[in-house]
Length: 406
Image (tube, rainbow, N blue to C red; front, side, top):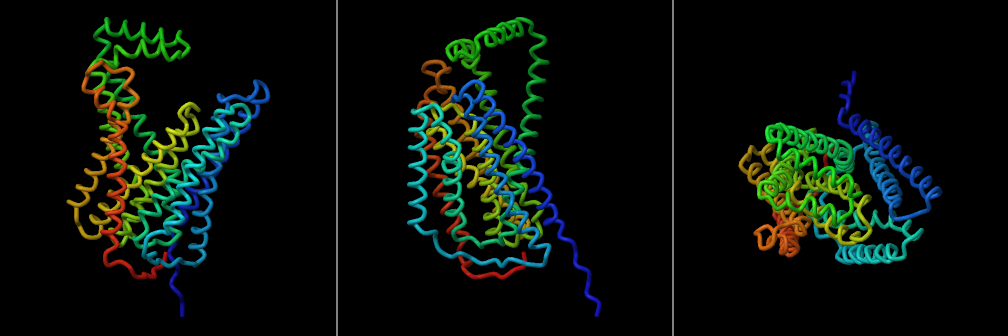
């Protein structure tokens, strides 16, 4: 009897290709950064200015390592082996989560000690970077997926691969294109107003000659940021366009799985992984270049941003699966709107914190900027409650094992 020809698994082939390209890119970039860092350290002496090269090298290595399991599971699937889907009913072990939280806190403390010591002691920062960025994301994902149907490892790692290689590239390219378009339009509009263009040219020249001295930069920029129109434009882009673009694109890895996502629970689970992968890439990129003076505080802020990305993308994944499998398009619209609102509120207060030194005294924006830290703490609490609440709601009636081919 002739056996039917097995259909090629294009998703597995794509998973191998994407992961392979990602590994080559990250290893090449990481190796270049490491070599350049050593050359600069040997010629000019080691300093905090050279540390970002070593941070970037280790971050790129971590991302390369995370792209190896997707290749393994894709090859395994192409070879005819399949994972089973089973439900890990119950919450993750509290002792483990507490231990990871303590380890995260100790990593932040050790990082601050090494920064105060300075010199070659700063080489201890890159390994700590993996812990201070990765541990919060792992804990949040573990909590968010604790009672959702566990997908096979092939699909989970494929989602991570797509989220580390494809999604950030698409998001960055589109955001750059949007910003360039806005700048071109603004330039065209200002070209008809020579007085404003002259002032801008003078300010730009002052910034060039200032050698980026913080006091000079603040004096040059403050008059512009105190203009309501400029402040509105910054918030409209940073807290308007950016959240819409990112919430549209972060769940990109879900679209190739449109016929394989069988329930809203699975959409939520895969969405969480999409958000975690994006958050890891973004946080690693920001933390590798941050100034050492606010290293721990920025790491804490990035943990909050990671929670935001995971929750909002999980919501959109839930909505997409509901629309695909049950034609619940209202749920998709509601989930996307909620994700954008949460992201926008986060960005508004995050931007205002940075703009406080430039804002006009007694302005509404300044008052909002002063309460921004408290507002972000409240928002973090809201996001955590939303994550656990969605997890509990989606777990109802789903605590059973579902053997499926991967």
